[in-house]
Image (tube, rainbow, N blue to C red; front, side, top):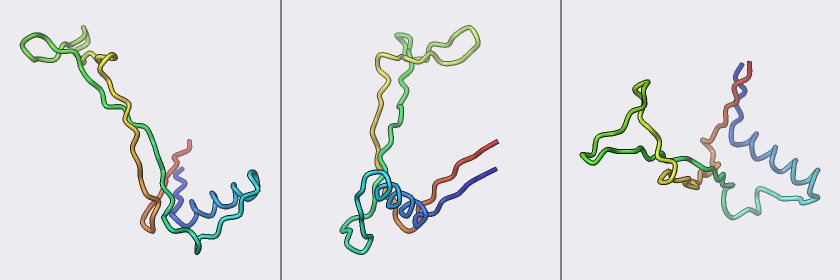
Length: 89
């Protein structure tokens, strides 16, 4: 089952949460910038031989180099065309 929330529903849920749990009342009309979502994404690095070819494990998969793998913080604006989907069993 897919649950899809559009930008208006996301904003309303955030405003309701802030009002209920934090006691902060925000008005969308007075906000100067749209809401922003920040998230982390992993950029994998793979181990390589001296000749530049990727090292493989016994099953044939590339071996991840955990020392050089980067965790990058990215941002996404929640504007009019934004949607978030949740998939439930």
